[in-house]
Image: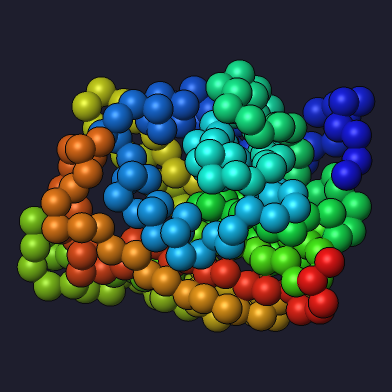
Length: 258
C-alpha cells in the first residue's frame, strides 16, 4: 500500500459535488431517522461481504459509517473518499479504520493490495458518466486473486419506477430505463436537506463494468425492508416493498487465493 501521508489534494480530480454536500450529508447520515441505511444494510453485511481476511478497502467511504461497521466485524479497513471534508470527519470519528482523500477511478495503491473492496452506494455517485466503469476496473486491479468486490448501488429501477401516488397506486415507468441521465435529487425531511448526485445505470452497465474488470458475479441481492421500519427510521418504506431500492453484488477476482 502506498504511503498517503505526503499526498495533497492536488492529486484529486476536479471538485466533486459531494464536497459541496459534505455538511448536509454529515447531518443527514448522522441524524437518526433520516436515512434508510439501518433498514437495508444488514443484507449487505450479512450476505454480500465475506468474512474478514487481509486488508479491506472502502472506496467512497463518505463519513465512515460503512467502514466503522466493517471494522466492528473484524475487517482491517482503509477508507477513501473524493471529498476531503468527508474523509476528515470519518477520520475524526475513529473506531479503527484509516482514511484518506483520494479518487476511486485512480486508486493510490499497488496492484493486489486488498482482499476485499467495498463500494457502498458510491459507484452511481461519480462525477463523470464513465467513472463508474473506471472505478470498477481500479477495484479489480487492487484486489488480490481470490478477493471480492462487494458493491451496493441504487437499483436500476429506482429512478424510473414511480408510484402514481405517494401512498400507493400503480407503479409506472417514467423516462427511459436505457438512457443514462444525471441525477440531482433534493430531499428534505424534518428540517434537513440533501441533494443526491450521480448517474443512472442499467443492470447491463454494471455487468459490463464487472466483465471489463475481469470479475465474476458470485451473489446478487435485492434487499427489501421489513414490515416494520427500524427504530432509527421514521419515514414510510411501503414503496420500497414494491419497487427495489438497492442492488447488492459480490464479484470474485479469479485466481488462486493468496
